[in-house]
Image (spheres, rainbow, N blue to C red):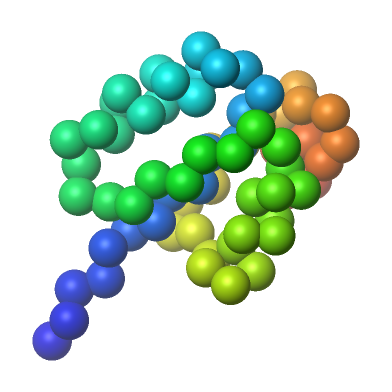
Length: 68
């Protein structure tokens, strides 16, 4: 039986928010993908869907609500 590594996608325009999330998950057994724009995240997860999405709702289009 193979173990699937969870994939967490973080999307935020804020450098501080991205860094805090990176530090929070640093010791966890997961793959973390960090993006500054929603469009780049969407392009990425078309081929590699996330297990969890953490998105800033106050970004420029597409915002976190649109991504969800």
